[in-house]
Amino acid sequence: MSVVYDRVALIGLGLIASSMVHAMRRAGLAGEIIGTARSAETRDIAREIGLCDRVVDTAAEAVEGADLVVLCVPVGAMGGVAAEIGPALKAGATVSDVGSVKQAVIDNVAPHLPSGVHFIPAHPLAGTEQSGPRSGFAELFDNRWCIIVPTGDADADAVARLRALWEGMGSFVDTMEPEHHDLVLAVTSHTPHLIAYTMVGVADDLSRVTDSEVIKYSAAGFRDFTRIAASDPTMWRDVFLNNKEATLEILGRFTEELFALQRAIRQGDGEMLHDYFTHTRAIRRGIIEAGQDTDAPNFGRSPTK
Amino acid sequence: MSVVYDRVALIGLGLIASSMVHAMRRAGLAGEIIGTARSAETRDIAREIGLCDRVVDTAAEAVEGADLVVLCVPVGAMGGVAAEIGPALKAGATVSDVGSVKQAVIDNVAPHLPSGVHFIPAHPLAGTEQSGPRSGFAELFDNRWCIIVPTGDADADAVARLRALWEGMGSFVDTMEPEHHDLVLAVTSHTPHLIAYTMVGVADDLSRVTDSEVIKYSAAGFRDFTRIAASDPTMWRDVFLNNKEATLEILGRFTEELFALQRAIRQGDGEMLHDYFTHTRAIRRGIIEAGQDTDAPNFGRSPTK
Image (tube, rainbow over all chains, first blue to last red; front, side, top):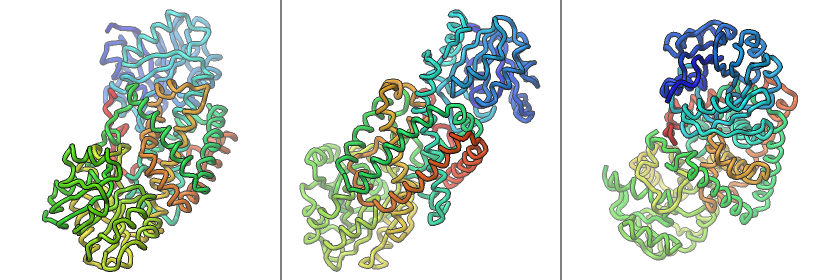
């Protein structure tokens, strides 16, 4: 693999940015990687573990002379960062991001970017429940999808180059319209996260079931929800605030279905329940065949854990 | 470890029963293990893989001379099995089960058992999304809880012996009242399963998001739900039909909370969302500290899967 960008600037140094550093280094995709983060503590950790070639104190400083700038901050912070870096961007540079919502990012970032800069939003569909500069690892994007959402400002060469970077980091790449991206993600990610947060909140709240019981007996299914509900609170707050329409729409569909199942339980309609549960099993098989999850029971958790 | 029961009969040969066979053999807990299943195909597979010492065609035959009989069939089938085996049980034998609901099992099974038999319901909180006689493994119960729900018919020695069996198979053992068991499990297992089934059903149903997109982009969170929603449909139908009250109660709490979060999204109340998501993160830490899940990111899934 050869160098795709001479200088890459990462704004924000959490799970995704730190994984990008490891993945770019693994394949030699970047000549030099500059990083910055708003919090001094994060910058100190990044310096201590030698995450980037250089860690600087401000976003404006980080983007100087960079061929690619990637915004790796929560979706709600992207507009502010764009305003800060706009005047400092090199002509012909590409600006991208890794946000979980695309239309709102376009609305908030694009107005701050000078002409002559290629704005190419992207979203790698990969993550874990962990966060911070120490949580990254080179394999995070391997065999995962990255969705690129090109805007009018980007030419085909610039898009092809960003695609090469993500493929070099191990991803499959797709392109999509922002609105469709936001709907698909509301289904496969945003609503499931909200539901998991809710279920964990309910369990925590029930006074007749003590915390200790919920925790002791969590292996019965609940613990899978708690993994999702352990994700970064700021990131997820911003996702819901910025993908409001699609999330509320899918939530509406979800409660409609849930009420139908609830009614079947109340009325003792075993046939409806059995049919429903049989159908959903097939989707799991599809995901395993597509290489998007392991077929090992319990995700291959160690049985003694 | 020494023999706890000279002869154990397992009625039903799915994931739990087949794991019990492997776990009992690992520790030498049973002199002889007799198995049976309603389906001829299941019995044939069990014979082919040498699962039990003997596989017989009927439940009545299986329980002859057995010191321990364990009902490992879906909760809705237990009453019928109890009626069938009642007259064939050896005096002084213990009858137990592994059902996910306890009050309904007691109501349906107890009337069919002769006096002089110890009825001691139990529920091992362990499982995977797989089912059938080939899916069992010896480590399934290691470090998992088994809840014993003793009834009036059981003497202390019989309870202690069943406890020794489960501890020998690797479990921690707790005792509980049936009603409390059913509420705790509605929180930690039954409602999470129903919600996962519902979310997977919604995703499958949305015509604007194709199946293929849902599957391709499932790694964003959704795939964790599909694992739970791939569990055995008959078993889960029976759980909901037989733990109706507690499940409906927890579902009511769940929709109440969900509506509160939905309202916060609609109104743009970022503070409420952030507080909620911060709080649920702590529960995950508790579960990991209690040894009930792995702290490896993504459950320790292989990163290339």
